[in-house]
Image (cartoon, rainbow, N blue to C red; front, side):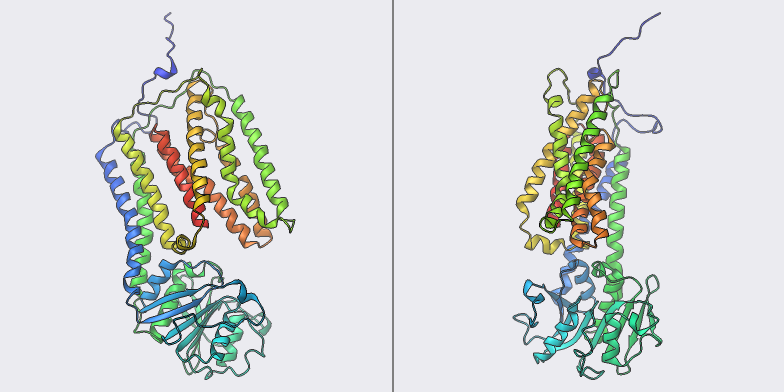
Length: 518
């Protein structure tokens, strides 16, 4: 009987992976390159949509001054919506002095003569209007209050449907109140300044998917919109709200309102993101994949012990962060644990593999996939980054973050740590496989991936329980830092043996998340 010859695992030739994909071609077909081209073009479209938002706002005939309470305002969405009503905008950020007793809101420098409409957001919304009315500024054409708190009957003394003599609009949430004690601040303010009963009155309905109740005073000078969705930090991200705000501004102060602009921009944005991701996935599906490096024996004990050790480390970091949330003196530092714990844990995982990486007994020879796969890897990573950045520019407040952010040094440190760690962990995984010890570390076992996310996941739960919005935001950043780089590089690692490119993409995506979070 002839014995089966034993082959050195390092001498195994790269071959296409079969199984349920038996029809997968050995070379990258033209259809795959076509799909990648479509994905890249649609990713570029995201930046075109961003640039187009500046086109009409510069020539707008009206200005909306937004007194912000610090909540997130995606400026591209807002700019597109207001341009449909021939409006530009300026955001007046809140400062530490505004919370002090006796603080008086004023018009920013340069707007004392120009005609403006005031939009005040949050608990101080009514105070903004009251202070500006007391200042006697005659260039204010109207007021818009968003999610205001009721200031008390004394503060509303003298307000009627005729005073102030300019249009006033209030936006709030529909509480479905059954008694006067259940009315929210928006309803109570509107009733005082209009004389309209919002509890027993008959509102008009606007919208179909998430309809809002609309009340208008008899003289058409007072307007109330009660959204069926709870108004929160994501209010300005809602296309329905922006559409209604734009329509009110256009019909009350501007030269009309173009609903098609907002609809077209939203459809193009959603289509570009989804189709770009789908086309990229189609390209990756059609790229041939080599048989994984496996030795003749799989030893799972070493890696299982490593996973247990890092579960303890991750649990200890999560416990430290949780304890911080209950100690007032160090509570503010819990958010740093939430944000940077994935970076720390992944870095420690890389350090734990240094012995295997430096070992001369186990060598790994890179497979020669050729220049085609190199180009495919680079373009795939570039497209992924463009999709993330383009989507962030259009849907978040990344534009203002870039202007005001001093987080460059931190983002650079995260980039270096995550890039080097990814290269080390991928190389360790490849050397472990080819030596017969099976998959290893972060990219070889899902347990390591989940352990890197544990502290951020624990802290986001505590943030929700304690209603700590800062901790929730920091935890979401931490989860994004752990998830997005992994999701972006996994397909590149699968099709390519250029682990330097994979590590570079891993670090860039992590640094972008940290930088965008500010």
